[in-house]
Length: 584
Image 1 (cartoon, rainbow, N blue to C red):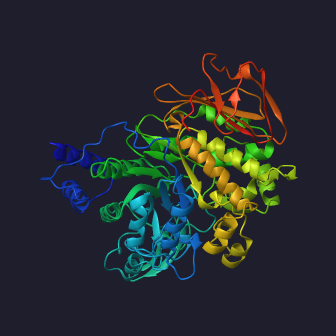
Image 2 (image 1 turned 90 degrees about the horizontal axis):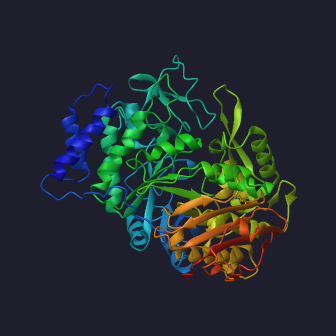
Image 3 (image 1 turned 120 degrees about the horizontal axis):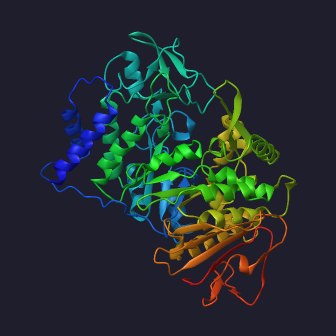
């Protein structure tokens, strides 16, 4: 009786979520409505997920992009994106995260007006489905808030119709001082409604009004949205800003137990429709809290490894890997059925909250100063005590790695490739931002036009201009795409780079970052060794303990490693992937 087991499991989730919430209808009727909305019927077979199964392997790479990151005249941008993928990424990228492609009013898509339609400026559902036929489609579920210009919020103001009771309100008299905020704007938005003045909760901006998940109609609506996205080809769901989903006045309103239970409920429903669909939680919070979103392999399949970008950039601009190494040694291996989602650049900036407790204030201050010298902008947040603290560095990764704390130098591309090689070899599923693949520099013009710091890393390329640059062997864009594509192709062929393969941090000097990966069948070992400094480094071969009975090769340069040599020489920012098996 799989259906009955599922029914009881869903009801159990709901009992926990709504334990302290008076409901208009019974939990039994809500359970039935959720299952019906997801399309799970009593008289049909229900998929039975296998626990601790990995629905990913070393070939999985996710490219992160806006629907209009590449445009070509009047052609629909999603059609242009598909052409770009097929021309430049067919042999490297197999999954595509298209950032919110819905009608929106602000925040480059994350203030959604209508969840059920595609922004006409980008294309149509047909264009989305065309991409989903050839690539695993990762889509955003912007679950914490929607646009203040949505029909739902209009109905809230009018006091009638769908959405009229969807939004969380507060009281200015309440003590909201400990509410965790990623922004410095006022938390409450004064709004005149048919029923008088209300103060709507806005975690991010006054154009992004927060949902009230104490109302089961909100949950039902999002399950309906999830079902729609599955029908359109979604294979990976990114739960945007999900840590803020449940609010209780008097708490910090982040990472509350009900939030975790809602995610578990969503997973339960999704995996009984299609066990291969993956949930990734986007929780830009300190590392220890972030890890809790794995649950017990029953919550998120993958979590964003938010601490990696600031730690890796800090490593490469200081030439010292001690903080990165300490963090990596402290990271628990993801158990089967879960994986880290590794990235070092995205549509957002380099988040600094995930570096709290990992980098001290002085180290963060020096990093911020260096990034400002490289043309970066800083976004701020209010701390618990009302002080402004740096929240995010806004800069393209290519420009963030143009030099060291001493200033710009000649090693920009080598340093940039080194960063990606470190990330590509690590335990987890790699995500690469389109502007990293293209070696895009800071877009100051777009910042001036939008007034938004994050626009610096959201360039919109003209396809013909981009093609000319990518076809020119002397351009930074050609060099970056060529070298990154080579690394990705090598990675995809190595069983030891499976997202759940064993990882062990090597104890080398502070200018050399190294770790060892071993395939699930224990047949392949890869020693990933990177010079993170701007000076040549030497290491003893005995320090990495290569087994004498095996033949070793550097997968990057194709050079045999002679065990008779006592030393290995590494040029500035050189990376070695030393393996006992060659799958090229």
